[in-house]
Image 1 (cartoon, rainbow, N blue to C red):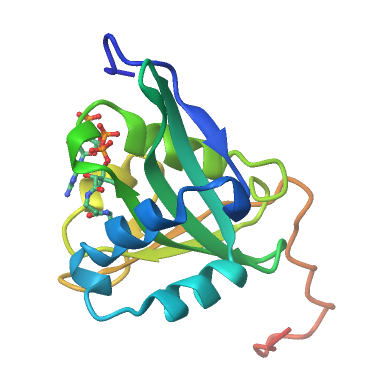
Image 2: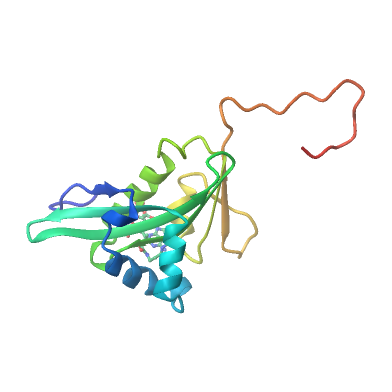
Length: 163
Ligand SMILES: CC(C)(COP(=O)(O)OP(=O)(O)OC[C@H]1O[C@@H](n2cnc3c(N)ncnc32)[C@H](O)[C@@H]1OP(=O)(O)O)[C@@H](O)C(=O)NCCC(=O)NCCS
């Protein structure tokens, strides 16, 4: 963390703990959510796992980061709306929040992660995300579950088969 002089981040994992005005304002300020209504954002949050960072500043607690994921808890996680307050960017909070999400106990073993970004690929590549198609925003991170093995093909079966 490069947050010299700033408090260590406190992780939020429930939407009801969050500063919803800040979340809505901050996400909507980004290029992908300019036309998003508050009702749409609220519905998306209701259907997502929500993560945030609060800093306990001398003047009081302040939310400075947010992200959400949808997942089936087994095969796929899709990450959306990662945003850090412009006043607190470049201090490691974005990476810190991403690491907490990737390591969340019920998400860490999910093998396929996806997200889309227009220009923040550098943030994600260090965590194993790869651009699927050059010039396209979609990024994917694949990891093998330790307990997952491709079933052996029965002898003599050379054809392809879908699971
Ligand atoms: C992208 C964002 C979440 C990063 O958060 P942050 O707290 O400023 O970033 P951090 O200090 O944790 O550092 C991020 C790292 O990713 C790198 N990076 C690559 N592309 C980046 C980009 N477009 N913006 C910010 N950082 C980027 C930084 O250089 C930094 O690398 P370093 O640790 O080697 O210095 C934040 O800048 C933000 O909210 N941007 C606007 C919204 C956005 O673009 N979100 C991502 C969309 S998927």
